[in-house]
Image 1: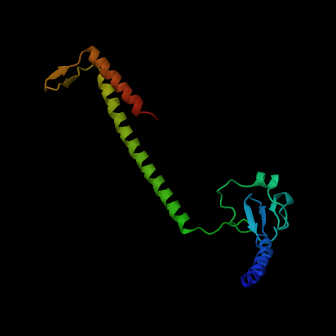
Image 2 (image 1 turned 60 degrees about the vertical axis):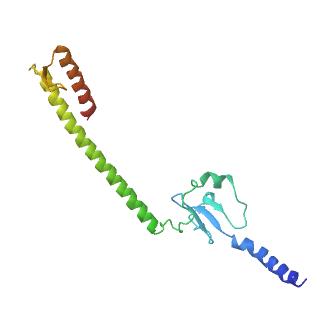
Image 3 (image 1 turned 90 degrees about the vertical axis):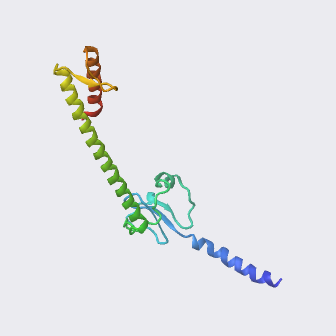
Length: 169
């Protein structure tokens, strides 16, 4: 009985304080970002951009249509549209993205260099084939073999394929 006399007033006090604790305004600023504050929005914010007022029902159609995408960090934005200061996590994330982009750029440059070298070799081979000079190759047993017309045409096709693959611009 004694505990009940202590718990009942405490419960009444907490239930009376709950609406005050949730008394928050929500609105969209000039940039379309959601702002949450315990103070009313500035006078330049039109009524259609006010999403929630203390004591007013929530979940209006205008509020859901104008709300930003889920996962956006708009609830922590201060009034006036100022951006929050960068955190260490943001800085590390940006540094990692920059390093990844730099690595990708270097890989692309290396691949472009290899393609350019392969292109030059294929074009040189094509010039030799087209020159009409006798071409020879060494067999697996180490013997020298002169290319006939069919083998020459086959080598020309191979050179054309290499040019098509490596000389794209």
